[in-house]
Length: 406
Image (cartoon, rainbow, N blue to C red; front, side, top):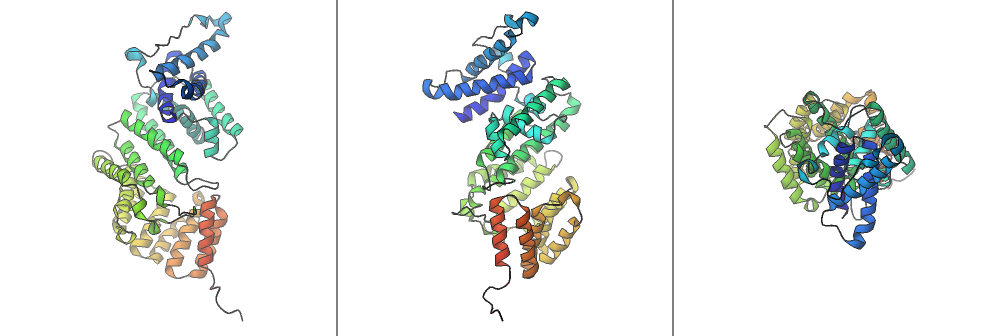
């Protein structure tokens, strides 16, 4: 039932926002309708037309709100019937318009994330707050400010002009990518990943792809998510400890997701301008298609990172390329490539730089330097599973504890 409600939420919200032109009021009404459904449907059964049921409940809520102002606006004349949404106009899927609105450039990235998960994903404020490790009151204020921004900016519930759509679509993809990344490797807390967030990001990206079937980058993004999420079951052991990629039990990888992801990569590459998600998906496919870690085609992965660096340069790409250089050309070459990030303020405080440095130093045989880098990385991360893994690696790469102390 939760999956059905999340699928219907953006369609109901889109219909209301298009009908009444008030996104914030419509969003509040839909949330109340979803709560009513979650309470009533388990006991009474799912109605024959659940979308119309939600539209009716949310619509009545909006009518009640309008009637409170009837003396001034006479909105009590608005009638919302149970069959609202029937017919061609009512069946229109406004999800893409809704995504564009929630990811409007005038909103801050945190607001875009929160509003997308609430309005399009159907997550509650409490669920979103839990995912991003902030108090529910803080997330509620963030969502409220985002809705106020939309209202005060006069943003209408319409598709952006054709000249702006490509840029706006890039923002939508980026928001969905960030949702997935937060789910796959949480930025803090006691769990390594949140399957609910990765599943929601994949679901929303599927929806986006169905609405923009000719956009090859959206297909690339979906492929990247599927190929990455396919490894989730092998990322931790029975005790919940992190397992690095080269040590994972590949029999636990999701073969169905890998097959779908590889097919999407094949369908996307060469069909349009090459974008960063397509290239990252191709890299993920090479990892997933290797039967063992030793069979990984690191030279080809390195070549793809060099393409990615030209298509979408940035410090995270440089960091990942350094890993590929380390496997393709040796740890010393990897350390030299990592040196490109020395002094880059954009990566200041990022524990992954020190973690990669530690791994390369360990492979190069410099145990003392590796120990220091692992310890530094462990102190920098706020993720408990990553901290435990890095602390263990620091201990294993430290001085030989069996040596005689004389």
